Image 1 (spheres, helix red, strand yellow):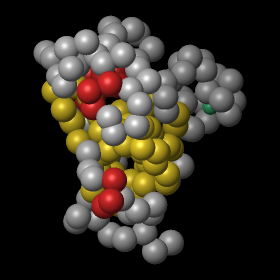
Image 2: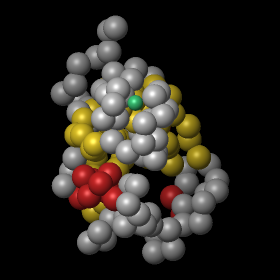
Image 3: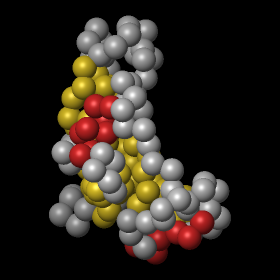
Length: 142
Ligand SMILES: [Zn+2]
């Protein structure tokens, strides 16, 4: 991984529990204390009932590849030496969609395939999420 890649600030109060979860290899999302809606990415208020705050809950760190895109240009600083790379939109836990890089050859990807979280420890405080094919997961027949 490039030394010039910008790393996330894991100390921001809004998102710190998400990053702490990744360090423990757990995928954490916010859940509204009033209506129970879960949300990702983190936000100060619930988009369904506008209640502020909420709790953090762990969700199943696997899902279905909903769509993906292959980057052939390093649009962000630090990614130039990684092209081409793939970023996927993965539906997890029924209705949440989580975007992250995919660690798999583009030729092996199929919309609807099962994927699972992969946790890569970059520094003592930063662990990054990516997706990888879930060979043990069931095919999405629904
Ligand atoms: Zn709510």
